[in-house]
Image: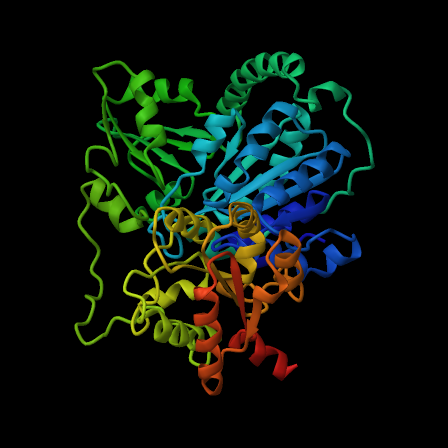
Length: 530
């Protein structure tokens, strides 16, 4: 079955996981990780093997379901974007304490430069915090090979592992030589079952073991085939290149030979002994790493004070944003390559809601009502409807993270803000809004919740939404009175009725829900073609 394919980094990871004997992938869509799960969903090989690939409600439920697969002795993959690590953190860090039975890999795709995210979070910190190994491939080929190795590593050491990709690795293509797949694991339970019960009496024992194991993980990183200390003739500078940064470095040397000694790091814990060997040859070390200066900061405890460390902290490389071959080239003191200057004639095109999108009609109606309430505040959430903050709508004042619209509106209402309106999408509501609605019901908060239901997870390309067809029942089950769960259809011809409903529910001084339902214009187009 081995062959060559042109694959995205996400696709190389997915294919490697399938060939490693995957039983299930558990994920919530989020750029730049979405294509991992979609590749598995569209794979005939995955269907033949009955690999689970349905979307989870959120990253926490995905992590917990995958942990159940691991407990049963089979191999599971969890996928998310970097901020999803915050959602699954409790389960992820707990999994380091339980350990793994079947191989368990968590794939976190970071988004430096915030192409579609609210921060530049670096997921490697989660691996360090939880004391689990981290793998950070430098190429698509290495991604395929590394995910297979990671599953083996996870089972050999009975530990979940974290695999980190960044946007450029996830969404760029390269040729990948695949290998032969292995069979899925048979059902088998952990030998040390009591460590899966995290009562203090068990967790204390397991914590001591994990600390000892973490030292062994570092020893294995030193000898790993994915890490390498490569000598060079010019010892005036030593380079530590992590993950895709190694790729950026080598792109500046057409012959594939860097003149300086290079420590390539793609498997963590950070191999300190290799770094010390590099420092024995070079008094100045340049650290090239995508994301935050995790390695650069750690070197303070590795080298003595005579070693000069350069990188993001001293401005040799940009402190924020993605690295590029050009920014690395500049840090090396090389002349910039000749390129095309950006044209002044090119007009910036910020993202906007699609023409014909139901969110547009909803915001138009909402704005028409809200303008009559001088103290009104609208709290929005994460989704394509977040583009309603931009012209011409300017429809809300806040957007922080998944689910925050509801609870921020509740807190603001308690503080005296009225009307206090929350706007959330259908997928975000089932991801992390339902518990906030329960809080609001229990406290009798004077808020109006608007669920903008486009029947899909629109921002990431139209994946299934967990609450489709059930939002009214969910809200009623949580405790919202049925007569104050109103459904409207966002179309220009319905503006008078929409405004009437919005006004009535604002004037109802308790929790009310308006479900604004019309299919995403993009998925509607696809469905009409079919």
